[in-house]
Amino acid sequence: MSTETITTHPIAGALGAEVSGIDLATPLSNSKTEAVRQALWDHKVIFFRDQDLSPEDHLRVASIFGDIYRVPFVKARNDFPDIIDIVKEPEDGDKYNFGGVWHSDATFDECPPMGSVLYCLESPPHGGDTLFVNMEAAYACLSDVLKAMLDGMVALHSAERNYGSDGYFTDDDQQSVSMNIEPSAEGNKLTEHPVVRTHPETGRKGLFINPIYTMRFKGMTSKESQPILDFLYDHAKRPEFQCRFDWTAHALAIWDNRCTMHFAINDYAGYRRHMNRVTIAGDRPR
Ligand code: SIN
View 1: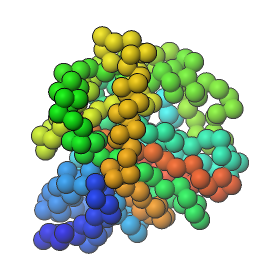
View 2: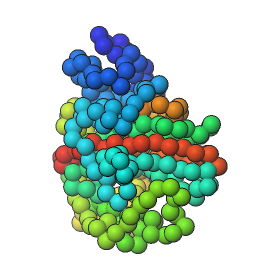
View 3: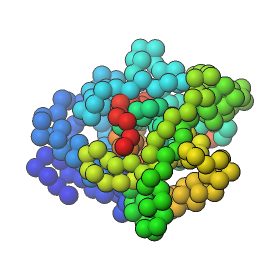
View 4: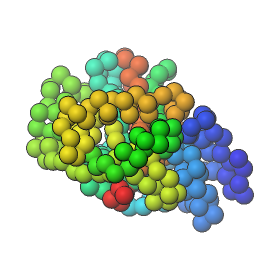
């Protein structure tokens, strides 16, 4: 679709659009800013190619959506503490890939990020794509009875599996050559969120759970919760709810963390992939 200011080209049926007709290295006019925000509400993840951005430009693009969120547990760039370096070196082989599990960012936080802005500095010659799913489409395709059950439920989220005192990243073998991840007891805290959240911009309802940070349903045991969670993850990951982005150097993605999950594919052992991520602060899910 073409608006007065930008053009969007959907890349899949469920979500995702490439945006053209815009240079993000220059400050955007009010109408372009509004068009980019609307494109994100419409498509949930938007992509821009061939953008020549400095770290300051990257931060400015993120700031059109809100304040910047400081990512816990992951050491940021020394020169830009609001930017995390997501790097996989050839020496990391196939053992490690940041974001290589279905997730929404930092849902262990009381106010999880609204979104993230990921910029590709170097892409491998093949592979290293990112998958996204539309959690509102997944919710909409559940039966009315299951929707009604989930609507009143609360889930407990925690960073424990990844960043807690016994989490994945405490295993030295899992440390990447070039990323510095700092697990701690802070990661073991539990936070409550509704299982179905309403998007504050569009009013649409979507599932708000993910396999890495959702621990169980409030008022249910892990054993009771897990089969229902597993069903919901399998359902949400259906190919028709997905899109897939093939990175090229200087491409940029902005995703809405409130209604999507994403997954970084680990299929480029022996090659370097280098991304920078700026994360945008969000509000308390309702
Ligand atoms: C992330 O989960 O933030 C990383 C996604 C990616 O590198 O594709």
